[in-house]
Length: 120
Ligand code: SF4
Ligand code: F3S
Image 1 (cartoon, rainbow, N blue to C red):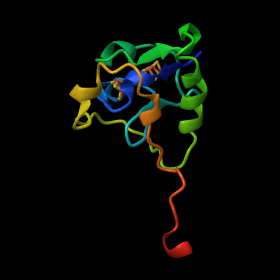
Image 2 (tube, rainbow, N blue to C red):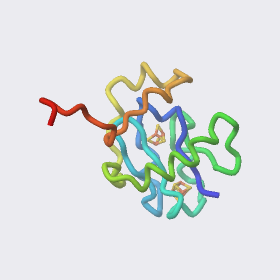
Image 3 (tube, rainbow, N blue to C red):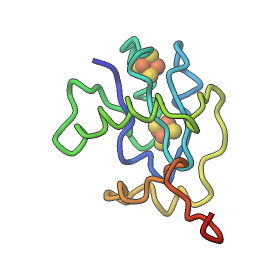
Image 4 (cartoon, rainbow, N blue to C red):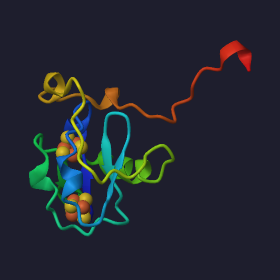
């Protein structure tokens, strides 16, 4: 099974992972990265690069991590989640969030419906 990005990435997005992936599997959202399961070759080199241990083998995911298997697959297919292959600075408040365990509710999604101004 492919590798997946899980909860510790949310609000941090260190991006060390993208620079080592030989298959350019990563896609980027506002405050999270996901791995495209169709291109991941299970090489595992990205795992040790993530400073918060967010990347795991889907086959070894625990109960809390298992929902991220479908989430990675879905986000990798969505418009607004482009490929990211170059490392960049982490999010500004990464230090505040890196040790917070429960962050799933903070995942931002660019395709979330926006309210229409003026009823249009
Ligand atoms: Fe890329 Fe290998 Fe990580 Fe898959 S396991 S996302 S191919 S570095
Ligand atoms: Fe996220 Fe870790 Fe990569 S925090 S961006 S999975 S290095």
